[in-house]
Length: 199
Figure 1: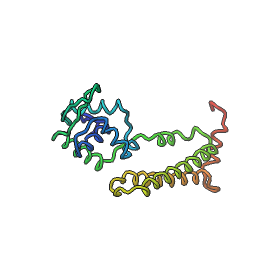
Figure 2: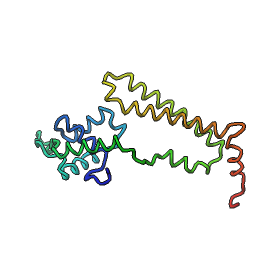
Figure 3: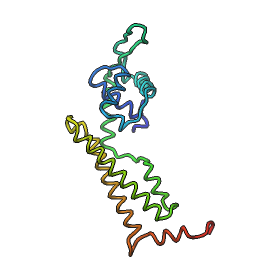
């Protein structure tokens, strides 16, 4: 499991995958991650990237390839993937693709506690969420349609679209379950909120 890996941060997985192509300096890795849109999938900062590179080196997954200095600038260390790093990358990817893992999205947490808000407000909030989901869909669709790269390298964006579509369908269905004139949850839910506190 990922939690038992020597380095379990998904940023480490991205670093290993880029070093498959060629040795690179952490600054180059940062630039490639941003240029290829990986920052949309994996959060990182300049500092966290350097920390992960250090952890990967300590674990033996990457090693110094060469060190150079230009003028008075600090030394630049270029790192390369080791055979152990290549094996770790493949094993880790296989696990992530094959094994569904329980995650803790914030929206799911909010849904588990949604009864604390009155139904009219929930419908208003959900309607606003639908509009924002539609905006995100347009943005991602444009990203996919306006690029010349092979669809294989945008498959994560296609997955995001599928998730957005599924979430939008769920939200519309939830609104319907609240507002349905015959079987809607709205009246019972609203009555709960009309009860005096402490009863």
